[in-house]
Image (cartoon, rainbow, N blue to C red; front, side, top):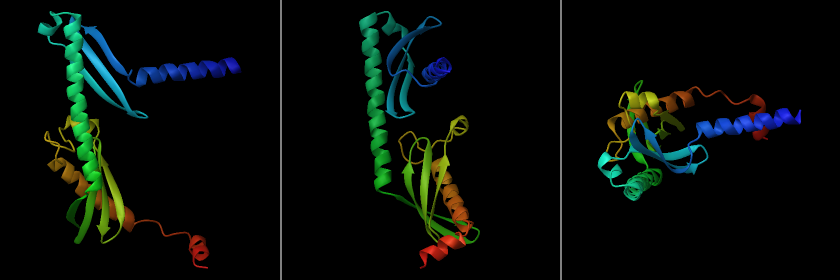
Length: 188
Protein backbone atom coordinates (compact mmCIF):
# COMPACT_ATOMS: atom_id res chain seq x y z
CA UNK A 1 0.00 0.00 0.00
CA UNK A 2 2.79 2.45 0.94
CA UNK A 3 4.72 1.46 -2.20
CA UNK A 4 1.70 2.34 -4.38
CA UNK A 5 1.34 5.69 -2.60
CA UNK A 6 5.05 6.50 -3.09
CA UNK A 7 4.79 5.48 -6.76
CA UNK A 8 1.77 7.80 -7.20
CA UNK A 9 3.69 10.69 -5.61
CA UNK A 10 6.66 10.05 -7.91
CA UNK A 11 4.38 9.95 -10.96
CA UNK A 12 2.75 13.25 -9.88
CA UNK A 13 6.18 14.86 -9.50
CA UNK A 14 7.28 13.60 -12.93
CA UNK A 15 4.06 14.91 -14.48
CA UNK A 16 4.57 18.28 -12.79
CA UNK A 17 8.13 18.44 -14.19
CA UNK A 18 6.74 17.82 -17.68
CA UNK A 19 3.99 20.43 -17.38
CA UNK A 20 5.68 23.21 -15.43
CA UNK A 21 8.63 24.98 -17.04
CA UNK A 22 12.11 24.48 -15.66
CA UNK A 23 13.20 27.72 -14.02
CA UNK A 24 16.33 29.51 -15.16
CA UNK A 25 18.26 29.58 -18.43
CA UNK A 26 18.49 26.44 -20.59
CA UNK A 27 20.19 26.14 -23.98
CA UNK A 28 19.31 23.53 -26.59
CA UNK A 29 20.11 22.59 -30.16
CA UNK A 30 17.12 22.44 -32.47
CA UNK A 31 17.69 21.42 -36.11
CA UNK A 32 21.20 22.89 -36.12
CA UNK A 33 20.15 26.13 -34.40
CA UNK A 34 21.15 27.21 -30.90
CA UNK A 35 18.06 28.20 -28.90
CA UNK A 36 17.47 29.17 -25.31
CA UNK A 37 14.59 29.18 -22.90
CA UNK A 38 14.36 31.25 -19.75
CA UNK A 39 11.63 30.75 -17.19
CA UNK A 40 10.95 32.71 -14.01
CA UNK A 41 8.22 31.82 -11.52
CA UNK A 42 5.92 34.75 -10.68
CA UNK A 43 3.56 32.90 -8.38
CA UNK A 44 2.28 29.36 -8.01
CA UNK A 45 1.49 28.06 -11.50
CA UNK A 46 2.41 31.34 -13.26
CA UNK A 47 5.68 31.94 -15.08
CA UNK A 48 7.35 34.48 -17.34
CA UNK A 49 9.05 32.71 -20.21
CA UNK A 50 11.40 33.58 -23.06
CA UNK A 51 11.99 31.23 -26.01
CA UNK A 52 14.47 32.53 -28.59
CA UNK A 53 16.95 31.49 -31.20
CA UNK A 54 20.51 32.80 -31.01
CA UNK A 55 21.49 34.42 -34.34
CA UNK A 56 24.09 32.44 -36.27
CA UNK A 57 26.55 35.38 -36.30
CA UNK A 58 26.52 35.29 -32.47
CA UNK A 59 26.88 31.49 -32.39
CA UNK A 60 30.06 31.78 -34.48
CA UNK A 61 31.62 33.96 -31.76
CA UNK A 62 31.51 31.18 -29.17
CA UNK A 63 30.10 30.25 -25.77
CA UNK A 64 30.81 33.50 -23.96
CA UNK A 65 29.08 35.64 -26.62
CA UNK A 66 26.13 33.25 -26.80
CA UNK A 67 25.62 33.44 -23.04
CA UNK A 68 26.03 37.25 -23.07
CA UNK A 69 23.51 37.56 -25.89
CA UNK A 70 20.97 35.38 -24.05
CA UNK A 71 21.41 37.27 -20.77
CA UNK A 72 21.00 40.62 -22.56
CA UNK A 73 17.79 39.44 -24.28
CA UNK A 74 16.46 38.12 -20.96
CA UNK A 75 17.15 41.49 -19.32
CA UNK A 76 15.22 43.24 -22.11
CA UNK A 77 12.26 40.95 -21.45
CA UNK A 78 12.50 41.56 -17.69
CA UNK A 79 12.37 45.34 -18.29
CA UNK A 80 9.23 44.85 -20.39
CA UNK A 81 7.68 42.61 -17.72
CA UNK A 82 8.36 45.28 -15.09
CA UNK A 83 6.92 47.99 -17.33
CA UNK A 84 3.79 45.90 -17.97
CA UNK A 85 3.49 45.14 -14.25
CA UNK A 86 3.64 48.86 -13.47
CA UNK A 87 0.90 49.60 -16.01
CA UNK A 88 -1.27 46.76 -14.67
CA UNK A 89 -0.77 48.04 -11.09
CA UNK A 90 -1.73 51.54 -12.25
CA UNK A 91 -5.02 50.21 -13.69
CA UNK A 92 -5.73 48.43 -10.38
CA UNK A 93 -5.16 51.70 -8.48
CA UNK A 94 -6.75 54.11 -11.01
CA UNK A 95 -9.80 52.38 -12.44
CA UNK A 96 -10.91 53.23 -15.96
CA UNK A 97 -14.53 54.41 -16.17
CA UNK A 98 -16.68 52.72 -18.82
CA UNK A 99 -20.31 53.06 -19.94
CA UNK A 100 -22.45 51.07 -22.33
CA UNK A 101 -26.12 50.62 -23.20
CA UNK A 102 -27.70 47.23 -22.76
CA UNK A 103 -31.38 46.40 -23.28
CA UNK A 104 -32.26 50.08 -22.98
CA UNK A 105 -30.33 50.50 -19.71
CA UNK A 106 -27.23 52.62 -19.24
CA UNK A 107 -24.62 50.50 -17.50
CA UNK A 108 -21.81 52.31 -15.71
CA UNK A 109 -18.76 50.68 -14.26
CA UNK A 110 -14.99 50.54 -14.12
CA UNK A 111 -12.17 48.44 -15.47
CA UNK A 112 -10.52 47.44 -12.20
CA UNK A 113 -7.91 45.01 -13.49
CA UNK A 114 -6.35 44.25 -16.85
CA UNK A 115 -3.59 41.77 -17.64
CA UNK A 116 -2.64 40.10 -20.93
CA UNK A 117 -4.83 37.16 -19.86
CA UNK A 118 -8.05 38.84 -18.67
CA UNK A 119 -9.95 42.04 -18.06
CA UNK A 120 -12.08 42.48 -14.91
CA UNK A 121 -14.81 45.08 -14.39
CA UNK A 122 -17.07 46.24 -11.60
CA UNK A 123 -20.62 47.34 -12.39
CA UNK A 124 -21.66 50.41 -10.38
CA UNK A 125 -25.03 51.45 -11.89
CA UNK A 126 -27.88 50.52 -12.10
CA UNK A 127 -26.83 47.49 -10.00
CA UNK A 128 -23.64 46.40 -8.26
CA UNK A 129 -21.74 43.44 -9.62
CA UNK A 130 -18.56 42.30 -11.30
CA UNK A 131 -17.55 40.48 -14.43
CA UNK A 132 -14.49 39.11 -16.12
CA UNK A 133 -13.50 38.21 -19.67
CA UNK A 134 -10.59 35.87 -20.32
CA UNK A 135 -8.21 36.16 -23.24
CA UNK A 136 -6.78 32.76 -24.00
CA UNK A 137 -5.18 30.91 -26.85
CA UNK A 138 -8.26 31.34 -29.08
CA UNK A 139 -8.16 35.12 -28.64
CA UNK A 140 -4.49 35.19 -29.57
CA UNK A 141 -5.17 33.06 -32.65
CA UNK A 142 -7.74 35.68 -33.74
CA UNK A 143 -5.17 38.42 -32.94
CA UNK A 144 -7.37 39.82 -30.15
CA UNK A 145 -5.34 41.03 -27.19
CA UNK A 146 -6.15 43.04 -24.05
CA UNK A 147 -3.34 45.50 -24.77
CA UNK A 148 -1.89 47.21 -27.83
CA UNK A 149 1.85 47.08 -28.53
CA UNK A 150 2.14 50.32 -26.51
CA UNK A 151 0.47 48.53 -23.59
CA UNK A 152 -2.71 50.57 -23.73
CA UNK A 153 -6.07 48.83 -23.59
CA UNK A 154 -6.94 47.73 -27.13
CA UNK A 155 -10.30 48.01 -28.86
CA UNK A 156 -10.71 44.26 -28.24
CA UNK A 157 -9.95 44.93 -24.56
CA UNK A 158 -12.62 47.61 -24.39
CA UNK A 159 -15.11 45.38 -26.25
CA UNK A 160 -14.42 42.64 -23.69
CA UNK A 161 -14.90 45.10 -20.82
CA UNK A 162 -18.33 46.10 -22.21
CA UNK A 163 -19.28 42.40 -22.54
CA UNK A 164 -18.08 41.82 -18.96
CA UNK A 165 -20.21 44.76 -17.79
CA UNK A 166 -23.27 43.29 -19.54
CA UNK A 167 -22.53 39.88 -18.04
CA UNK A 168 -22.18 41.42 -14.58
CA UNK A 169 -25.57 43.11 -15.05
CA UNK A 170 -27.24 39.86 -16.15
CA UNK A 171 -25.62 37.85 -13.35
CA UNK A 172 -26.66 40.41 -10.73
CA UNK A 173 -30.15 40.80 -12.17
CA UNK A 174 -30.76 37.05 -12.06
CA UNK A 175 -29.02 36.36 -8.78
CA UNK A 176 -31.02 33.83 -6.78
CA UNK A 177 -33.13 35.23 -3.98
CA UNK A 178 -31.60 34.60 -0.57
CA UNK A 179 -32.83 31.65 1.41
CA UNK A 180 -35.83 32.67 3.50
CA UNK A 181 -34.30 31.20 6.67
CA UNK A 182 -31.13 33.26 6.20
CA UNK A 183 -33.18 36.42 5.74
CA UNK A 184 -35.28 35.64 8.84
CA UNK A 185 -32.14 34.95 10.91
CA UNK A 186 -30.47 38.20 9.95
CA UNK A 187 -33.57 40.32 10.62
CA UNK A 188 -33.94 39.28 14.30
